[in-house]
Image 1 (spheres, rainbow, N blue to C red):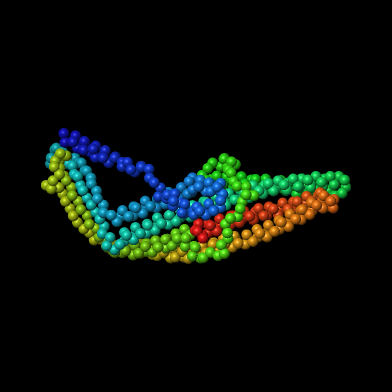
Image 2 (image 1 turned 45 degrees about the vertical axis):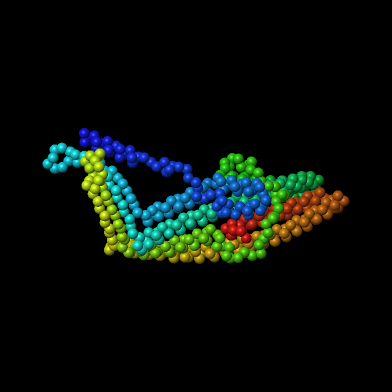
Length: 451
């Protein structure tokens, strides 16, 4: 009978242990909400461009980009790691059920026993060692949030740059098609002139080579556009098979609306997530050194146990049937094989690395901001000069067209003038798009900050 009771209690105990808290699998709200993400990327900066298509792509990337999802999950991982360390500062309480079947020496019969222990333990953090470790994990969490912000800025910048390069290629392909038409006409004129004995065969071959080269160039342009469309699809977390259907603004509708700042204060780097992350890493390394020093100090613990024991599971749980224990300990390991000394030296080494990384991030951030602003200013000046050159080419072509109509120059001369005009227009297209991409480069260099 006692054995049956023993096994009934054991089964009940196993069933209790198998009960899983429902909230473990409950849906949880992401720690990075939409308002935080909007703040991450400074969405107003993108709205000022006034391109609804690009803005829609950026929103899709924010929602579906896999790298951003992974980054957010890593932030959640850091948060839970921080919570695990924080739990080390808390007291531990536990309860158990210990059913047992025993037989004493000299006795032929067996008997059953059930014990219901309640126990507690707590490490007194008199020197703040565990507090420092928790603060260190807090820094890891903050660094993870900053890395997440960096990821968002990088992805939306990549979306913008890819988008504008596609717009550029759309226009370049149209211009290249015009160049192909001109070179085909030039080749046909050369071929006809050669048959009439007016030009050499070498000139025909040269015209044919130029025509073939133009056709080869447009293939390369189309290939590059196709690859960029696929890249844009992946950035938005979509299937690249549908990339050919992606809409974009026409090049001719692009308007330069953002002005170029005269200068940017070096203090702007203080808003860059990588700079802030390097600063947090330095703070973490300092906490780790402090915690490593406190490892040499003794640890103090208090613990308690009370257990209700009975040979019958229906017995009363009273003081008569209990076993109680309350104690404390002070432990100071005298020899650990050099582990604590090595740990202290290791953390000091990491601190020195963090100092150098902080200095490096500081000067590198200033360099990137200066480079981005320099590129934006000088490339804009270059663009304006190329526009002047294009206007001159247009005038030249206009007067050449008049000369052709008056019979002063040949159709071949006019076609060559037209190709020169188209080539210059290609340069303008490239440099205008470079302006937009340089704006994004400056946005990324300042960490998406408002200036």
